[in-house]
Length: 397
Image (cartoon, rainbow, N blue to C red):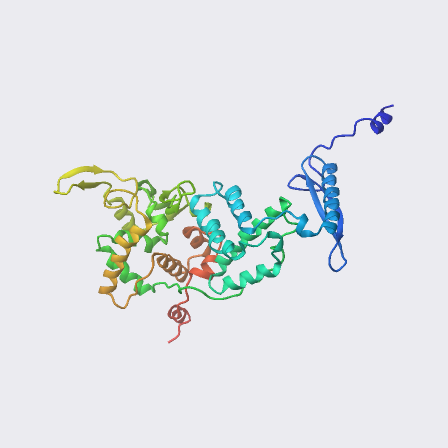
C-alpha cells in the first residue's frame, strides 16, 4: 500500500543541495534549436525551487523563441540600450557595495568615460563579439593594459547580468579577446643608491624632510603616509600600516571628500621594521599644533589625529600635501643637487623596491613590506634594472 501511495499520491519534494547545480540552483539542460551552421544549441536553465521549475523555464523559452521565428527578432526581443543597462548595473550591483573610491575609479570611470560613449546608443542585442574586440583595439592605443582590463571587466559583468535578466540570449563578451601589447604613459624611474643617499641627506635638514624620509626608507604610498596615526609608530621600532587617506567622490553627495577608512586590500595592512634614526624622528615629531589669529594671537592648541597634518592640524588632502610639502621639497633638493632628478612620490616606492632587491632581500619579504600578495608587481613593474649594479655583481671592470 505504501508503494501505491508513493506512486499515485503527492510527489516527493526535492530537498538538499541539487545534484547538478550552479551556486545551489537546480539545473535543467534543453536543446533550444540550431545555430546558423545547423549545429544543435543546448542551454541551461536554473531555478531555486526544483528541477521541474527549471524545466518549465526551458519549455517557455523554447515556446517563446518559436514565436520569435514567426514575429521576427526585432518585434519579440526585449529592447534595452547599453547605456541603460550599464547605469542600472552600477546602481544595483556596485554603488554602496564597494568603497566610494573603488566605485569611482574601478567602475564608474570605465563605464561613464569609456563604455557608454562607445556603446551607449546601441541595443544590447545588436552588440557583437567583433564590436568588443574593436573597442579593445581602439582603447589599447591610448590606455594601459590594466586600464583596458578594467573596462572589459565592467563590460563582461554588464552583459552577464543582461543574460540573467533574459534581456539577451548570450553575452557577446564571452570568449577570447586580445589586448594589443602597447607601451603607454611616462616611464617610471628610481633613484640609484648614490642619488638616494643625496636625497635622504637633504631630507634630514629640511623642515618637511621627515615626510620624504618615511617614503624613502619604507616604500609606503603617499596615501598610507597621510593615514598614519602616532600610535602606528610601535615601540618595537616598527611602523604599522593600518589605513590610507584618499580624496574620493562620494556616491551620496557627488562631491570629493577626504576619507581615511582602511586600505586597498588585506595585504596592505602590514608591519614594517624601521631603523633607529627614523623611529626617533617619528617619536619626537610634535604631536600638537598652535593656531594663531590674524594679529598673531594664539587662538588654540590642537592635537591632530594624524601623524602628518596640515598647518591647521587637520588631515592632509593628498593633492594639497603634494603641492605644499612634496613638490617644494623636490624643487629645493634639485636646486642643490642638479644631478639628482625630481621624482614623483610613487617613484620613491619604486626606489625602495629596487634598492631592497639590489641588496639581496628575499622577494617574499619585499612583497610583504610593500603590501603585495606576490612578486609579480615587484619583478614586472617596480624593480628597476641598474647596469652598474650588475657590473659590480659580475666583477666587471
